Length: 346
Image: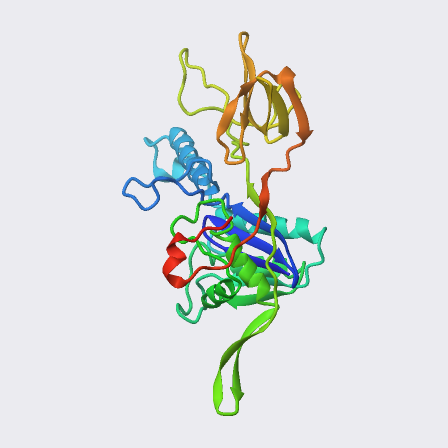
């Protein structure tokens, strides 16, 4: 059984059986990378997110168009590109939303090759819920497209977002609502476990003699499982050069996925530095007469250091994903309500 807890910046995916938890995933969605200035007056798009790249591409395109237009001529004689189609007729997803949904589908497709998935329990995130009614947001856009594609893997069942907390609390799982960017099971993966477990447990009403009420039926065991963080390499694949000229009127190279040392950007490698083995992903290189180095990044795309290409050992070719597996995590039972704020998982 699979459960998906979708958010704007992150998505939690869990695979659960009646007797054990198989795996937990924390996917950092590439469409909207969470910036430090989100919500502030000086909010800017993350230039390495899909949204930021599309905005920058449009900005550079407008600049190039403006340079070739002779404004001294009448409007109908200027070098304007004629419209080729009505861009309001297409029914396609925005690139940012599409990339987010494709990452979630890729995780489900890869796990379907390993596990027999009986059903996918998907949370209704903000649209058509009991509380909000009909709504739309960057999270709900593409929700139906995702479900239609995921139904090719296994039947998809919608679970109301207001019911997710009930299943999570019944299983003794904790929710971290203060900082959802933390790469821990408490942020999104625990909700995904609750969604997947809703296939095995139910909250039903009963009438017995003179008593009536509600009770939990069924059984589901939450066990230690590998916690896996998945991100995407922040590469400039089509950016040919930097926007600003360097000394001498030279535009420096920027972007691309090929290096002159036999490696590709996004390759997973290992290097020994000062007696310690360092593993990471290739993100860039320097190739001058004096210096020849390759930059290595961690899964959050923070540069570790630069190394000599001769000391690198290739582990795996680029899969366009950065996968970091953590230790097996086991949730502990919830403490009383007064102590919930001090609760943390092992």
